[in-house]
Amino acid sequence: MVIKMEFHKNNGVEYLTFPSFSHLGFLNHAFSTRCGGVSQGEFASMNLSFGRGDPQDYVIANYQRFTEAAGFDFNSLVTSAQDHSANVKNVTDADKGIGSKKPPMHSVDAIITNKRGVTIVTYYADCTPLFFADPVTRSIGLAHAGWRGTVAQIAKKTVEKMAADFGTRPQDLVCAIGPCIGKCCYEVDDTVILKVTQIANIDKNGLFTNKGGGKYMLDLQETNRRILQSAGVLPQNIELANLCTKCNSSLLWSHRATGGKRGTMAAFMAIK
Ligand SMILES: [Zn+2]
Image: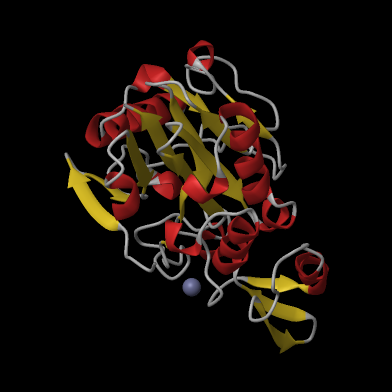
């Protein structure tokens, strides 16, 4: 299934959604862009990271603008604490406010929940956003997969944690892979490619192209799609954004396009 994400603009805030997730009905989800916030300079304008030097008042104002525009409760946010781990955390009402109104968690790159009204949030600026929804057990998840999370198979670990905690069957899962740096722009060296070739149980054919000189172009979206499939997710249940952050850096934050002087996007999801 290859469908373009849907674009929304509400009160100046621009964001994206997946048709396959909107149709599920039991959840609300959104992926932010760099447009519609109040931040200035290199963070202009929708920066959702507290940790990059943007004044906290601006970041909070951005969250308030975004949650109002996209239909989330600011007080219900539970945000990740990403350090390219493969750690998955199951969160509940008691975790609301973590990372925005309370101190952050430690080393959590994926969040899952089956509690209504808990808004899970993960961060991106080239890395791969992974969305999970199980309409049978009414549970959800988000995972952050850069190359480290990808080769550590955080996609598969999120499926396994949802199975263990919620009884999710992989064949019931609806998944989506959001905007990330594409094979067109993601140059890596042979240390990364060696790890990719060591990922178990997936076909490596076409995942990367050798440019010579120890440089390769890597396809993070397709690598994660194949890992999801190896975890039992059905191919027709995986929607792809096919949207490169670096090629679309006027709409999306890209670490590589900005040389690291940038704000941060976020994925949001909550069970209604
Ligand atoms: Zn590109």
